Length: 301
Image (cartoon, rainbow, N blue to C red; front, side, top):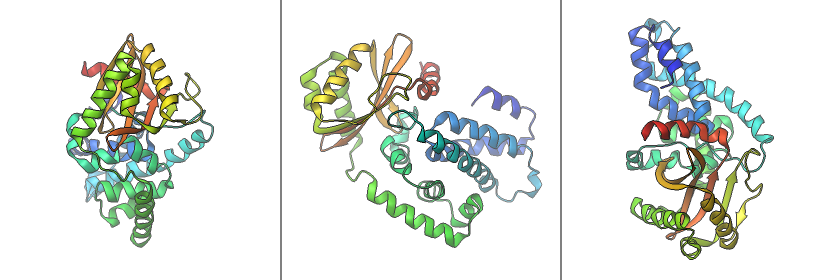
């Protein structure tokens, strides 16, 4: 929890503080899935706390619902600003990588909802559809609560949920991959990247693999998707050669690789697996998107 948030809480009434702490993980995940940015999610939570700490607790019937309403409305406001920034973004936009604990993968639905592939699907929804889908499909919030959160009628929310569900179903990855298969593929991938093993990379990549790289115009990254094993292997060999360490961690509910150069993060590689091979690669190198993860990995060392 950010120091500024903790400091503000010290003077808060116990009931407000206890409720916020109890629901903070839920609020963070909801907002992160809506925004695709851990840094922006933290900002929204700080704003949520400031508003919540000023609420008369005697008038609150359902603390979770009230907090979700505040956070969702703030996130919807921020989504619109982020969408305008994305229109000017240099190269492919990818969600900010989020360091997660290994036990997140045990909650299959939650792990899928924060995966890079799913967050990219959520990006194709309208802001309202995104909010409704996350609240209903991931966290099973009832329609009345969602209606209050997004300022729409329960009937309208049901229609939005149905439309969003169909949209996501048509675009989400259809191949289920077990945790054991994911780990085996990633272990082989880590060995190949770390050792500069070209043949090992060809063995683990699908022939039609696609890599999306997010440098944000700040560091070098392809401005278009890189398609085909030949081109992807060439890039991975260069990236792996520049890294001083390649470590496997849990990112967005999935095993991923963190590449370091000295004390700094070079990038985060997450994968999409089909039929025992890597069919999609997502590499985030934009320093702004790695700052939150840099702090988290430093704390967990």
